[in-house]
Length: 509
Image (cartoon, rainbow, N blue to C red; front, top):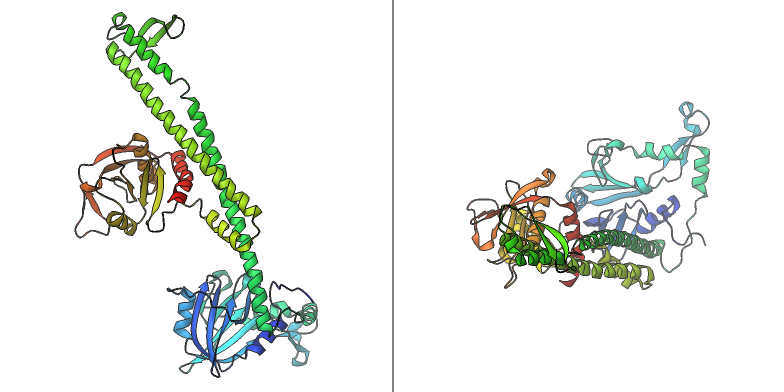
């Protein structure tokens, strides 16, 4: 037995498949296109319904009987719609593999009819179809990367092609010459000899050759799809892991900047204890530092402030640094949990041996990097703990978020003077909107707007309850009132952090 899992059909196998199918006299009842690289002809002949798949996959091009029911998209793709309009309801009058005439000898141009021999089939199938007195030809070329299906009239004028390839003149209005194409690969004696050496491979299983081919291609294709899915998922997870590691490195470096945050409070205390020794306008205050064995220290002052205001300035810097440190620590903890989850998923991809479970793990992993919302939330969802940020990228998503997902006290952000996304921050009871979350929302508003290339933009924001719909305007258009302005300089690192950190948030939705 030869190759049990054929990568493609040879010409003898195509002949056998066509002879078993016995397509002439069949009525084309329906055409559907279950995926981007194949279509199915649903046929009727002699009281029997049956289906034939035409796969134009570069890896596994083929034509054969199919018993498995494949998806039928509600909105048919372009080529399926075209075939429905032109051959549905038609009758297949002929179904054959193209043979090319090739000249023997060194000078094909000087050959006579006696010098011409028939080259074996060149894996181009010709289906002649008549409908309402009109005859059309569906050519199916099973040549790996050059696989295609082309519908022509009887003169060879192309009406449309599954893959439109202008460089090969495989577009509407051009002439398709299958005999010339076949002859180009079969004219030499060596090519003819090689072609004649092909044989129908002995395949395992019961039933006709069509049935065996369906089973083997389905298993082979399924295995290949799983392998590609797993490889793609691992690549996606590797990118996520690298971005998370880079973000964690930056956050840990930033955490080091807060190592001396208590010093701001100490300096405030020193100023407060020595108010009598300073006056408004002084740039420096020299005192003994009772926090460090009364060592002398010089404290920088803002001359425009009073000594008490300078002390409060240092206390304020301490409060902001403490909040910043807390925010960074929270962010580090969250990204570390996300990193551990991504690493577990990568390990699961390598260790899992159950095919059904493996595919599910791969699909979950492949979705990990994409900032998708929960199942019923349009647009994108991001996290700026403890706040959720919703982003509508289109007029429809903006309108849907306004109608179903936000409330009056939620916040709305939008890039001023630029078309773009509506960004909503979900309000938290008893919590005001911190600056970091405002900057997160503002950056997303600019990032998902036409102003992204400018790098800097004004963003206005207000509560949702202060928006009113514009009469007669496009869907989702609103007019804000009581809005405030936020000047945003786009921060790519912030955007990447939001995208990377969004993985954990979406898994918790």
